[in-house]
Length: 419
Ligand code: 7TS
Image 1 (cartoon, helix red, strand yellow):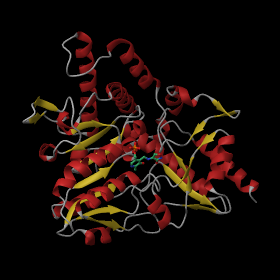
Image 2 (cartoon, rainbow, N blue to C red):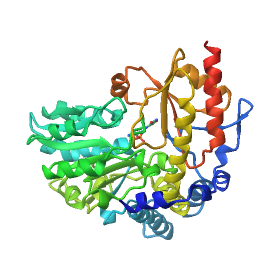
Image 3 (tube, rainbow, N blue to C red):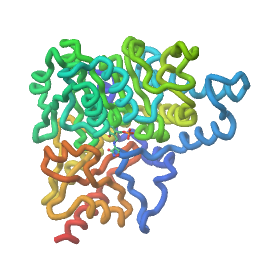
């Protein structure tokens, strides 16, 4: 049991002060179509606590300058704030060194970086990359691109009727041609938490490196990259209660060292001439150009906020919400949950007989309830379940049981309207 899992098991959910937390999120306190906003779309992006908004505004008002280049005081302050955020991130995901924390735009860019800088130079025609049927498009399309460029092929791990990976099939797919296994830690479409430790151990036994798409897991489960022993971990700041346009690629230092740069430009070099260019040290080799400085500072503030509340406490509280919602949704005739894995978090995806997800989404919006309706950028898993789309309620640390009650009566209303 990891530290986070252990503390989840021993956390007292009733001690979680959700009203205090709600008070920290200004966007939650507004009316939509005459109803109090009920924000159940944290899976798409999380609302921001005042501490993050204040950190951004303070940084722009007092400390803003470009990083790593100026000798003047503002330049030093900005660099300290930016590098301070990197250290907060290192601690948050338990990486061994800040050299392993590359700031990128988000999960999508992190995965593309690995596809182009790690996989592409190594792949030969006929080599294999394993991924799963439940991936977000951002963990499918970059690999399709690299397959087109190299002649490598994708191998896809199937998913059972509960939305769980068929692990025996995954293990069978690992072959001497496998160059990488890439999979989602917590599925955005189904809510499934994948047994990543077992999967990583199986891959490593065959010398296959593993990339985890942690876009959904980082905010809801907590991450310890050394405990997981993953080779790459990709996630986005905006789902972690931080700003958009900033995210992280974690990678083991030995891997990053051996990889060529992804983008060329300023910052990622030590020396440039027309004959020869020497690249900068890690992680700057992968951070060409002026980075999202304020984004990183805001993300640092989000991490302070999350750690202040406690990631294990958040996980336990959200788990209670999900159980409550799952039970209540189960009582609605004609509602079919898409994703009923034993190990789930934060996501309730469903279809309702006779009502299109977009209609449910619109009807709920008229009651102030924000959910996502669509394929959730995961079309292959929608096809696996024989649905074009689902309605998805996704929970954050600021949601309440009362909000879930409103969701359930909203769904019932939608059903009656379409009867
Ligand atoms: N991987 C997963 C599992 C995701 O949930 C998302 C975003 C991404 C990758 C891409 O992250 P980005 O920040 O680079 O865009 N998921 C969603 C969602 O579920 N609804 O909107 C975005």
